[in-house]
Length: 352
Image 1 (cartoon, one colour):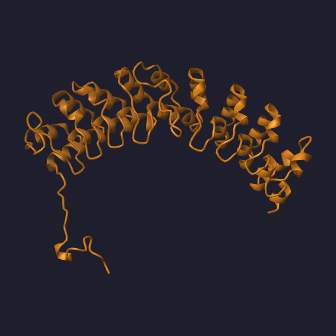
Image 2 (cartoon, helix red, strand yellow):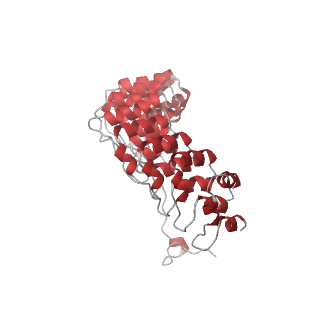
């Protein structure tokens, strides 16, 4: 039995909410999606004013998702129509659809350099460079998010003094560039005099350092270290340091770099009391385990918050190749016989 949304009203008296979607002249819509510029011009000349715009914007018509002809032409990469609109009706570049996207957002997301150039070289608000959509993304955010380095470079060079901000996910442009592995873009952003991108977005889960590690981008990691080593002291939301993060990714190259730059990373635990050597043991990462023990042999003596050594952790996780390697180490007897806080030796855990 269904329950009325408003129990105080009878079913036939319930409040109802309806809406009518926007609609575009069929001929104009067809001409735009097909890229027929002659039909497009004729349809535009015959267009009727809508209720949202007054002259000179009275020719604006909107589709069901509030897309203008410029949004549509950009989506279909109809360059001649886009060029014509930017030249004769430049105010279109600032129009937003139902998702808050301008045409430049669409072009940047698609990675189309020619469309981007047409839009930003229009005579209206530089093509909407600084406009944000409903996700808080500027066109530059979109270009970086979808991995379009050339488009990102074009957008930055168009306005080097444009201030940069975080999107609704809390991601900075520097974070997105680091995640994508765009060294040149990272350098441009960090050199920006007004963008506050020295190491922008220093949030626990949105640090450019962790973005670069997650993206396995060693050149970006090196650049970030060169510019600001102190940024590597930031822990993520799980209390892990950059070495933890690199180990968890199985990113051996970053592990070697980080351990070389700051050996103290190996002796810092996370919020659960685990050290990087335990993270490597838990995943059975032999190459990383071997390297860490070669560089910092006493990490074998580190214990988790539950009193477990690396052999406990590997045995508990069923990483038997790692266990076999550890059993061949000199002086391993201490690790084998060591009991955790529950009284278990590594052998107990291996058989559980």
